[in-house]
Amino acid sequence: MILFLMQKIRKQLGCQLETACGGWHALEKMREMEFAVVLTDYDMPGMDGFELLAKCREKSPHTIALMLSSAEPKSFDQDLLSDWVFRFIAKPCLPQLLASHLHAAITEFRHRRDMQAAGQPLTM
Image 1 (tube, rainbow, N blue to C red):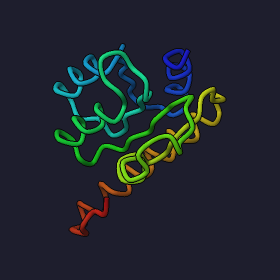
Image 2: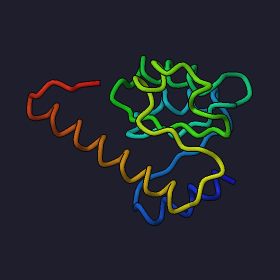
Image 3: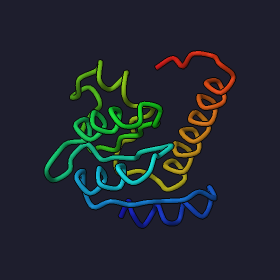
Image 4: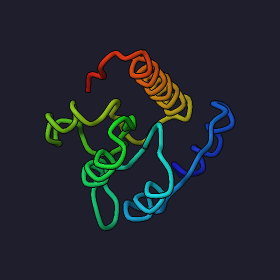
């Protein structure tokens, strides 16, 4: 369902979209290219969303992370959530809301990239 929504949202936002069928598949794609934004579910086969983000941060520390979950945010490690996740999105999620979060993440990535290019330190 989320992958279908992402295809629709990609057209709205006018950006390139890569999809993965789990954490390990996502990591393979991250080895091939750098991503501005990563949208991950917390609950995936083989690894959870935080494990994926930890590996993602090693390769691409400037990538903006969005996390989806049907679990309550308070059930997660709050330090990890606040340090690593730009936005936490509760499932189920309306397509318009998901598009809004993705747009905000893309805007944040561009802002950080521009600050870095201007020689200003990035705050994470």
